[in-house]
Image 1 (cartoon, rainbow, N blue to C red):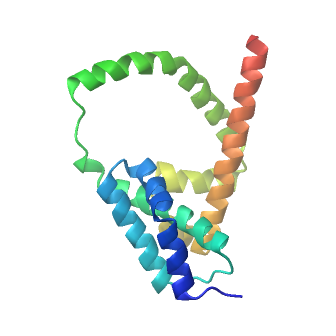
Image 2 (image 1 turned 180 degrees about the vertical axis):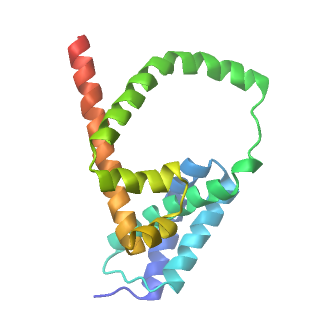
Length: 175
């Protein structure tokens, strides 16, 4: 049975803190995270989105909040404030320690990316290297927007799994 607008709003409001927190993890700004949550709620009420369960609403809300947060970051990229010198000094030590691990991770990601089929690599290039929105990518490849979102989501998971496997193999070889 399809949820009513009141049911959808009830689910969203009950999970407001969790959805806003998911947005905050991306934007690192409390007010922006709240704005993202509000955009998610508005989209849930105004789009032709249908939900069969509370879980479906929450899943959609978290994915939509992440997308909205990433879009917010793109729009406000130039407004970020440079960190103070003391913070940079503290972070530098941490970056040096993490640097070699990140080098392994970046190399694994490059290898995994290179192993993807050509169409998958091109989709990722258009979205991330060329900076196109998902809507622009969908238009260019002649696909529906939801199909592009789903494909990118699957590619993210594939790359994540591949990178983790490579890092595990590296650790096992070094041990």
